[in-house]
Amino acid sequence: MKTNNFFTRFKCLVVLMLFALLDIGPIPITALTGVFIVFFLPRWFKQLVDRLYGEQ
Image 1 (cartoon, rainbow, N blue to C red):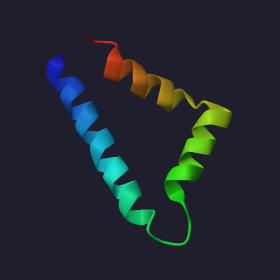
Image 2: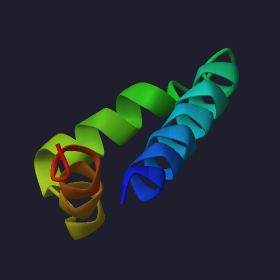
Image 3: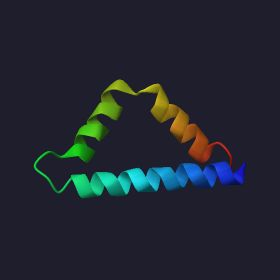
Image 4: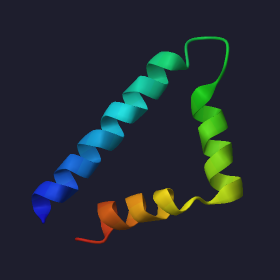
Protein backbone atom coordinates (compact mmCIF):
# COMPACT_ATOMS: atom_id res chain seq x y z
CA MET A 1 0.00 0.00 0.00
CA LYS A 2 2.81 2.43 0.78
CA THR A 3 4.36 1.81 -2.66
CA ASN A 4 1.09 2.80 -4.34
CA ASN A 5 1.13 6.05 -2.35
CA PHE A 6 4.74 6.69 -3.39
CA PHE A 7 4.00 6.17 -7.09
CA THR A 8 0.95 8.44 -6.89
CA ARG A 9 3.05 11.17 -5.29
CA PHE A 10 5.79 10.65 -7.88
CA LYS A 11 3.29 10.97 -10.75
CA CYS A 12 1.92 14.19 -9.23
CA LEU A 13 5.44 15.57 -8.91
CA VAL A 14 6.25 14.77 -12.54
CA VAL A 15 3.03 16.37 -13.78
CA LEU A 16 3.58 19.51 -11.68
CA MET A 17 7.14 19.79 -13.01
CA LEU A 18 5.83 19.42 -16.56
CA PHE A 19 3.24 22.13 -15.88
CA ALA A 20 6.00 24.38 -14.51
CA LEU A 21 8.02 23.91 -17.69
CA LEU A 22 5.02 24.53 -19.94
CA ASP A 23 3.96 27.54 -17.88
CA ILE A 24 6.93 29.49 -19.24
CA GLY A 25 5.07 29.89 -22.53
CA PRO A 26 2.36 32.43 -23.26
CA ILE A 27 -0.53 30.27 -21.94
CA PRO A 28 -0.70 29.77 -18.16
CA ILE A 29 -1.49 26.04 -18.09
CA THR A 30 -1.20 25.59 -14.32
CA ALA A 31 -3.65 28.40 -13.57
CA LEU A 32 -6.14 27.13 -16.15
CA THR A 33 -5.94 23.61 -14.72
CA GLY A 34 -6.52 24.98 -11.22
CA VAL A 35 -9.56 26.95 -12.36
CA PHE A 36 -10.94 23.85 -14.09
CA ILE A 37 -10.52 21.78 -10.93
CA VAL A 38 -12.14 24.43 -8.71
CA PHE A 39 -15.16 24.95 -10.94
CA PHE A 40 -15.91 21.43 -12.14
CA LEU A 41 -14.44 19.22 -9.34
CA PRO A 42 -13.73 16.25 -11.61
CA ARG A 43 -13.94 12.72 -10.24
CA TRP A 44 -10.31 11.96 -11.09
CA PHE A 45 -9.17 14.76 -8.78
CA LYS A 46 -11.19 13.41 -5.84
CA GLN A 47 -9.79 9.93 -6.47
CA LEU A 48 -6.27 11.34 -6.63
CA VAL A 49 -6.70 13.12 -3.29
CA ASP A 50 -8.16 9.97 -1.75
CA ARG A 51 -5.16 7.95 -2.97
CA LEU A 52 -2.71 10.51 -1.64
CA TYR A 53 -4.20 11.04 1.81
CA GLY A 54 -6.42 8.00 2.39
CA GLU A 55 -3.63 5.62 3.45
CA GLN A 56 -2.14 7.57 6.33
